[in-house]
Length: 216
Image (cartoon, rainbow, N blue to C red):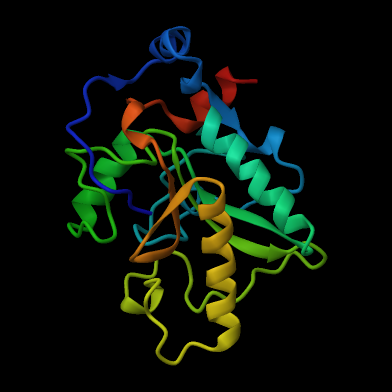
């Protein structure tokens, strides 16, 4: 859920006009609809319902989510590798408006799990993704030992106590595959990965529903 802190976000892209202008400056700023480019990807957008740690619905009627061009292309490669094993990706969250991160920070003041809102996050920059592995034939999630947004040591990558070999193997497979294609893991959350070059992107605060509508 969290991304490593970066410098104070200036400026914050808050309108679709500003977003399109940023693409003209650098086409790497383009936000890519993951549903459109990654075959058989599954979405379980946790902040599109109240079934998350805030107990609030933070997104309105979101049916898909976005990443910038380079990490989106890399995630497609991850999916293609996993497909050969009969596996695929389930996305819990990717692009997250800055205002949502501010709300999360008000609830959980702990930078191990929530990005400090004064810095923005990889999610706000469209370069971080929360995800897990699924069996493509059944659609069932692989056992990772904890649920998403578990704020305990059990969710840490280095935690192995009382975890079965199956759980450790599943986490290792996700981590190694994501890192192979340029993503970085977050030590405290087995589900969170951010793109290697997140510092070049501006923080965005465009409502997810509005972004989906504008990007059709």
